[in-house]
Image (cartoon, rainbow, N blue to C red; front, side, top):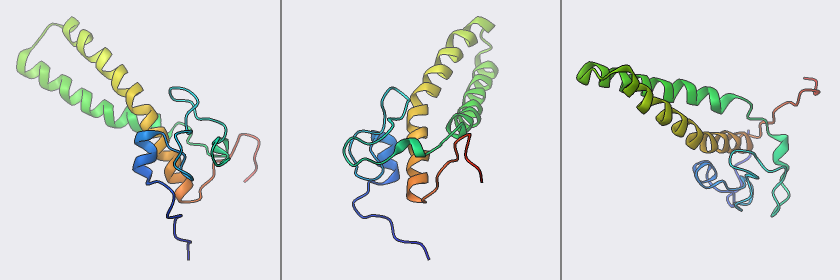
Length: 127
C-alpha cells in the first residue's frame, strides 16, 4: 500500500503553472526559462535526480501539432489564402505555443514523478 502524499506539498497543477518546488512549494523549480534548478534552495530537494527527458516535448508535438494542423486545414478550406499567409501565421503560432507550453509540461511531468516517487535513470545508471 502506498503512502499518502505530503499534505503540505503543492498540487501538481500548481507546480506546473507556477514553477513551484514539488516538496515545499517555493518558487525554485527553474533556473532558466525551461531549465530546472539543480536543487531547491528552500528545502534542498535534489531536482537533478528527476529525469523528465523528452516526454514533454513529444506530448507537445503530438497535441499542439494536431491542433495547429486542424486550424490550418480549417483556414485553408474556409478562406483558401495563399501559401505565404499560412507561413506567416502558423510558424510563429507554433513556435510560441511550444515554447510557452514547454515550461508548464516539464514542470507538470516532474511534479507527477515526485508525487508517484518515480526517479529517472541517468545515462550511467544500471537498472
